[in-house]
Length: 76
Image (cartoon, rainbow, N blue to C red; front, side, top):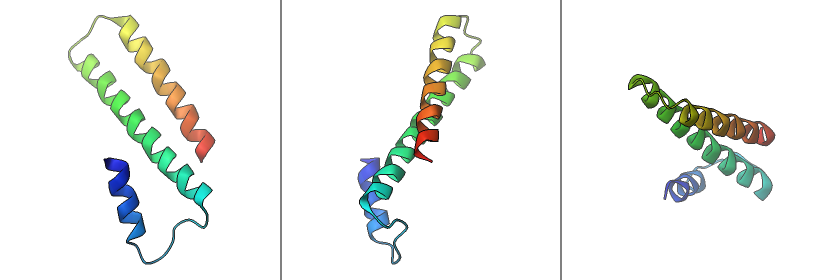
């Protein structure tokens, strides 16, 4: 749903921000991965706030976050 809103907003602008379909796809993918990174960070923050003792869960989230950051960097 968010991607549909993003595409609609982009389509309604007067000047193109991208010049071909590849750039458009790359931007949409990057935005999706940035949202994913933010969601993972929120979960990390939540676990730290409640003083979670499950180091394995925190480690899993940190690995996922690092993986997402790498994907974002390939799209920049």
